[in-house]
Length: 445
Image 1: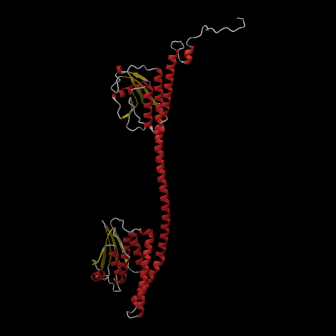
Image 2: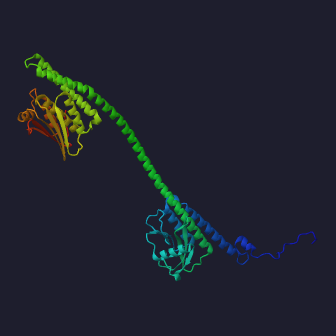
């Protein structure tokens, strides 16, 4: 062979025999190369599968903390081919309820325990104390599930605090490789973070639902406020119209009625004018009644305070007469139907007008008394009326022309299902008493 020809390669002297092993991870000697390569390849495939399971487990956060716990213990049990795997909490529950231990058994069932067994509790204390992985076997008194096992535990840190441990129980006699311990530690570390994220995700969902609920409530409140505002504007306008009717039209009609009453008293009973005066007086009173009903309906939708309304009635009567009228109220105000309240006001008005016209009284007193389930109204005077005669006219409900108001009183009392009667007043005069059950239906049509 000429000097310029290539010579076959020869083994270099001084080459490190472990270089290839460090490069590919297996020994390259001919007798064991293939078997070592297959073992290493199987381990690599198993590790990749484990990483996929771990990834899936850690991505279960949106499903909630319980789903994360289930997925993590299942991933640990499958990677180590363990008899059981467990996640144990030392304090904080991370939204998993009352469960303090999640166990994946060899038959694939996941159990949730509220109180960990004493052995697991002791192992948890030891693992958290050393703040690192713990390897134990039955010689150290660690048995769980009724079978001897090699136990590997790793702490589960969350933001600088130890939340619990992740532990697997391996068949007795199994040799635990350092890489397996590293995988368990890695899984425990990431499981703590995933649990924290799941708890935050769950809390965020709860707060989002709460915010949505409150937003819905606020929208409903806003709608109700808008409706209330519209009702308030309408009520204010109704009250304004009612005040104008009260201060102008009603007062004018009352003045007309009083003037007609003066004419009636000074006109001879045989005069042809008297009939016209009485007719005009009846029309004026009818108009006043209608105006009062309109005012009542307009004033706060018929829901005005009864004592205040009685004071308005008294002021109206006093304005057109020389009668001095007092008002006394006893007991706590109770709710009543608007129609019942309206009837009582009209009864008081009719009674006071009768006193002003016929009793020759100087004073009158209106008494409103609230009792359980009953409200009573009394109108008394110091005039010269005969209570027996008035009671007879009230009972017969047949007015004689001088007592048109008594017919209206009797009709309204019957409409509210109440009772009324006249009685003598101590010191002179008469008293009209009316008692009405609260809540009684009224039909004035």
